[in-house]
Image (cartoon, rainbow, N blue to C red; front, side, top):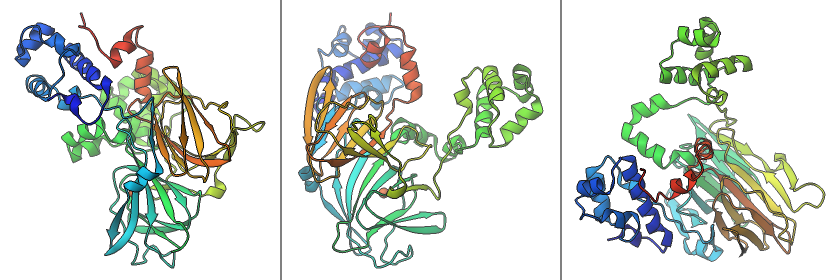
Length: 450
Ligand SMILES: [Fe+2]
């Protein structure tokens, strides 16, 4: 069976699979004759597979992973389920996914899926609180807690929702209202209830794996708990970063002192404390280690007890493109410096014309229409213009690199969550450093390397 038979139509999938096979053989320095010998294929057939004339089959993937130091997934492309770069999920499709989750012997949440794509790590849910409480006590016995989960969670609140979170042995309850938001770290236990049985009380729970899921998780789960723990770095600990780079390069304190001009005593001190070196010291150390200064700097976090709360009333708001003739009003929602590539916004669409494009971003984008009025998304994909009308409750996923415009006949609001995918800054710099012609072969290898 061809690996392209599942799960849906994607004409380019088979071509991407063919290119991956050629790239893998190139990496292993196998030409067609040696590949055919390794994989037990008839003479002349390898070129048929790598050109797409023959489909890549599960049998072929099995042969390759038995003969070569590869994983099955190394030969499997991912599925593109977008149309012209967007995937729209209608409110009625979300409604059709509705399921009630019981906790503590009664209904607790109603879950509905919103726009997900096989191209991004979003698992965004619309969740209605079915448990009603009469107080803001985190120890209220009718509150049922989860055990926490791997994914990061950005949550946007609508209506009288109580948010509960636990850090260590401390439990908290924060009464939330429409427009409040929170960003939470993985595995922090939490729960939600309603303060009213009659008013709408729901959340948009936009969970995502970002860089944590995918390859990193698979690599680390093979190494195990102890090694994973040894690789963990504490946010804000610049000294640990310096020690890690010195260990990686097997550079001793006296050798780094000799190369950098700093004293051995100062280097030991910088490695032993979380504090950051001065700029001149950073430049000297980076030069001595042969790295950029950014490799010696670490992110910090503004989370408290594993979450960052953003009350609506204290959230920064601004107009785009400017205060004169604004097309959009943005409100910045919860986020954290630990995730600099995540952007969460409430967007008010103030224009009825598609004349205020938002600059393209490297981020994946998620949109959910919060307001009671529809809006239209305008975009270009491979230079062709497209438009899609989003009704209240509709959601959409947008691939990176797309210039979007939003327009609405009547003012409306949407939620926008932008996250990074696997294309980290390191990958982007590597792409930018490739010689001419490299990008085309990186995304679709089409030839023997020699
Ligand atoms: Fe959650």
